[in-house]
Length: 149
Image 1 (cartoon, rainbow, N blue to C red):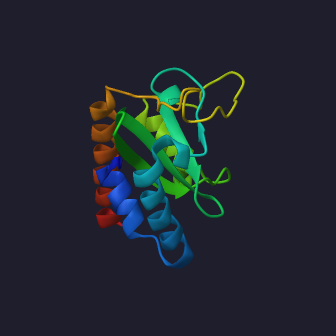
Image 2: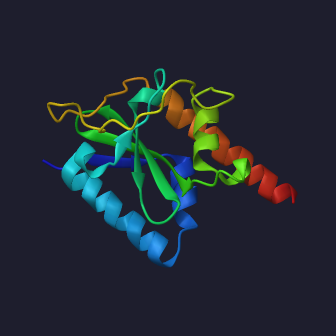
C-alpha cells in the first residue's frame, strides 16, 4: 500500500528552487517515501511534541527534508532546505523551530531514534494542520520579503 505524500506550501516553494543533483535527490526521496513510508526516513527528532513527532531525511550534502505523519498512510513534507549552522536565516532547522513555536532548539540530549517505532509504525501527529498552516505563513512572509527587496 502506497503512502500519500503532501507538500506544505513552504516545501513546494523550496522544492521549486532545487536544481540538478539536489532536485534528483528530492524526487527520488519522495518516491521512496511513497513506497516505504517512515522506513525511507533517517531519524526522528528529539524534544517535546511536536518536535519529537518529526522525522528528517538527509538528501544530499547539507540538504534535509522534514516530514510529519498525519496518519499511518498520509505524510506531509513540511520543509526542504540546507542545514547551515553558520547562517540561521538559511538553516532548515532554524525555520523548523519557528514553525514549532520555539525560539531556540530543544534542550537536552539529542539522539536520533529511528523514525519508525519498533513495530514499524510511524509517529503520527494528528495536530499537523497547525504546522502546515505555520509553514504556509512562513512561505508568505518570505515571499513578501523577497518582493520588498
